[in-house]
Image (tube, rainbow, N blue to C red; front, side, top):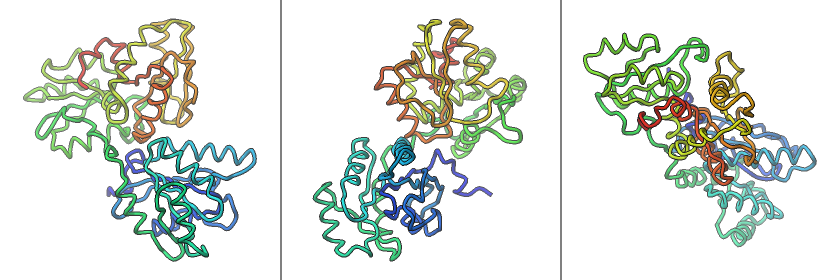
Length: 397
């Protein structure tokens, strides 16, 4: 049975909790959720790395709560933990900054850090039940940041409902990304999905972009026909009329294009996710840089998944093979996976990003913005393969 806990983490509202060590972040998360989600201890620095917890919060919906290490951590390891805490901002939709008494310099710095990144931020005076003069402390915070902080107590359950209400008010207007298939199809339209079940397809299940696309098409009341590449012609022969839209795996773009009905629009899961998660026009523009590569060029292939390399892996094997065949064996290709995305991109002539189904749109856009700021062209797997195949101008966006 499907539940909201089955919502992919990439589609959840990411809420981060930030503060000094022992500022009450973990306790507040537990009070906020009504569950023992985070470990609570009087020992400073109990939370050493960001901890993600997928939850369904009444009034907010499916969200991901991020408990972070104290931003006042010390020592060499402490510095590393603070950097990890800072890096979570790439995925955070809303930040909660805890003021817990005493000097507020660091809290104000982090409040401004989120403001500069245009991330909605909620200032919170934590452990309000323990403060001798909570109102005076809150007034001090307000004078410094120009905003009245919420006063909360995880123990007394004070201010928890107000915090939830504030989060609901601050949910970004663009948080809900456009539909995966957008306006390409609607009710009663027939959509053919061509999905190779090769070595990359997990045994016994479909990959996440396929699952999400099928679910959306069903919700749109489309007629969905699924087939493997070798059965595509057979599937088409069974249809009275050509499908309005064909969605395929990028690696078989060429075959599907050559064999599709003239009236059927064609796109791929990766191209759809390029628009759903990122900046499709930027990816299309970036694909032009592929024609300028030489053996002295350097390419970064960025994969969001951290799966073990497969024999015919599209990012680690197929795209590098295509590139070297076009450019030469001397082409330098670097590969990163998961969140290991370089800060300095200036050494690269182009970045080829995967569809990004495992990360939220906020994080993919942070990568794109970093590439734009450094003047590095960027594209994605599906757009690149369509460009290689010579059909980028013939597919539907």
